[in-house]
Length: 483
Figure: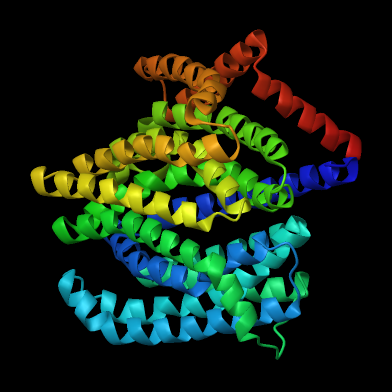
């Protein structure tokens, strides 16, 4: 990779991180305000809505978004054809959800789902446009424009949600927030990215893209369906409040993980795709991605798990304390996501969607078995959450297996690369957890814990001269020189 391309990659990564951190940060503040204004039951309704909308959104994207990014050369006919297919799918799925909403509300014993699902499903329509726009952004490495659009849409939708919650709208405030975010994001990207759908359509082009994308669609359906099945089981077997506590516990670590690891992997897919014919170079890039993501994500998860109770008590009030054990379990879960995403992105970049699909079938087979055992044998939401953690740990091995052959970068070598970050994070977790015994006000305690955690982790990484820290510092220096 030449120097100019390296600088562009580093710059794209910077703007993607800024976009993720900015939007996640604003979303976090908004969610805190809404959590104080709304009840756990209100969030339970939204969580159940998202089960069906998330699955429908997979169909709208149809795996063609990734196919557009992975394809070496793309023109206007490809983009407009994919948009037409995605929009047609969105309209059809909206009609289906509209018709099924009474049955869904009756099955889950949530009467509010009938009307709210019919409104919430409207997010599928702008989703068709956003899907193609995101592919254009990734191909052009125009993450600076995505950052501006995402931040504006998040601020606008957050304002709408908070204002409606203050007005007593209840769960409708959450629905309005989601709709405003997607519609405003689509409009802003039309202005900033400057790509417009044209009256061009080629069935042959679509069929070629589907040749790669259908396997990703099937994989995404398995992944999204499985992920939301756990929420559906909790919502059906327990109360909507129990579902809200589980979802809220997952939200905090997921938000932090997406801000860092999601940013790295969004940039790495187009970069790895360019190097798909050079396995050695791909391995080098993937290894740096795994190490850098783990170096940043692992201490975040360990620190968040250690301060979970005082953090929830301070930010969300005591009514949300039941979400603490779910938050801590999800921290274990997300700590290993850098391995998952890096391996899967490399497989996508190689154009091996067939391998991707096989992996999803294997993972969801034992994942479904674990879910059935925990749901049927234990009358506990916590047991179901533990099942998710066990499934994730097994999946880390499964996802890494193909790249031992494709890139000569197997699970043991990957674990060797992230083990230093994991071990230092565990040391930091012990030190920060011990401070919970201090009889201090929650705000003071949290400040001291964050400072102590950063000092312990950063100090040990510096003393041990971790390779991941050295690479991070080199990346920062390059960005400073470029600035």
